[in-house]
Image 1 (spheres, rainbow, N blue to C red):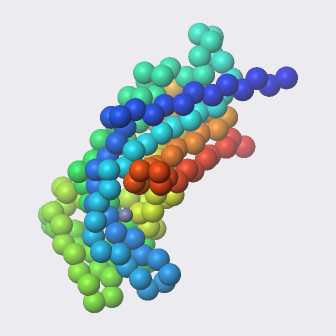
Image 2 (tube, rainbow, N blue to C red; image 1 turned 90 degrees about the vertical axis):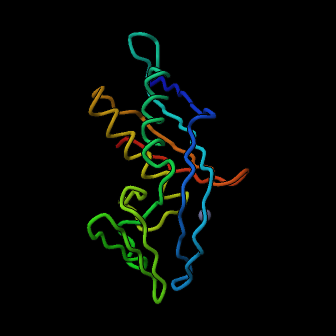
Image 3 (cartoon, rainbow, N blue to C red; image 1 turned 120 degrees about the horizontal axis):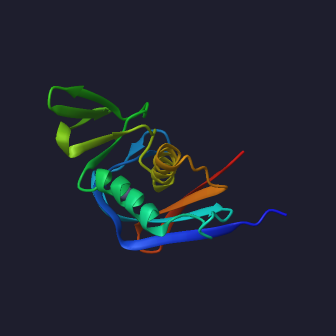
Length: 163
Ligand SMILES: [Zn+2]
């Protein structure tokens, strides 16, 4: 019999306040705006020798490190085929059709995602957290879900499952 337990973490400090805009319906591009994003995480696994699924404090710290990297930044969809970005010196320029935005490099985070939707941000955070858990603890959970709330009562979740 496989026993599965889960832990869930959501804290007032697991937030990031960031700028973004997305494209949708092919040729529509939002205006630049921002959100106070809030993150929750649920991790499933068997119990370790301490009778833990995973150390809450470590999990909160890793999530905080990830949200800190996104906080007070312009979120750039690095693999978008519609919003093209170029980095020249200390400047990042985004282009969509005849519109152009330019930001200081240090104000941007270029993400390996095609659109900065809450769904793909959740997936990116899952990927970052899985990498940290593997690297620091050689730990692979049974499943890992991250919810990204974009505005009050409006959230997307990505769930990764082992195997
Ligand atoms: Zn938005």
